Amino acid sequence: MKPQRLGINVDHVATLRNARGEHYPDPVAAALLAIEAGADGITIHLREDRRHIRDADVGAMKAAISMPLNFEMAATEEMVAIALATRPHACCIVPEKRTEVTTEGGLDVAGHAEALRPMVARLAAAGIRISMFVDPDPLQLAASAAIGAHIVELHTGSYAHGAAGEFERLVAAAKLTSGLGLECHAGHGLTFDNVTPVAAIPEVVELNIGHFLIGQAVFDGLPAVVRRMKALMQAARG
Image (cartoon, rainbow, N blue to C red):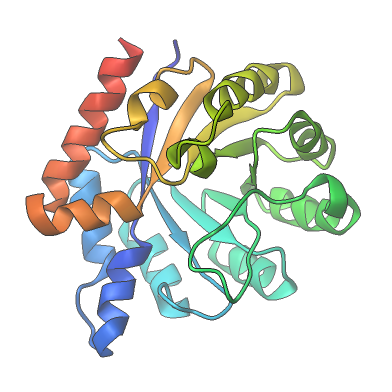
């Protein structure tokens, strides 16, 4: 199997900072600690309501880290402009609703293909790798390939919440990706307790994990939780 990367989402370090309107804890400092502990990349989601990551964090993160930056974003002209100005390694286009607590499911790429296609083309022309955050649905995978995406990130939230048959859907979707010319990532709701089966799927070459690791870091420290997650992933691949 191909080696598997771990991307750490540091959004909720910013959530904690913003709770008191202070300048700490700093998500950039958290990203640097995570990289030192073995993270292969950093993910941040600049939401339209700026509930955690803020505009200044984006440029600061890009300037500070040595590993790839994965910029999660809604499919809006504002976010495209920010991405083009920042030039992250990758942009992951996600669905976004102002009222949701967290991303509730995958993007309907098939239903919005004509609107997404020119955005994908502009970002790709700037040298940015484009990922679609989708449910493990063959229709959405095919649509992602058709509009020019390089990557699909499979939404693992339903699997993490114990939905019947969801792991089998993930396995089946992952198997389709190489034939479509897509790199396969996965993420959402993954923990120490449920990551092993997903990490063992051969086609999945990157996991993006945030909320659980930031929460567990309150008890164990961020370097320790990053190292433990990497160890679990490596054991699953071995």
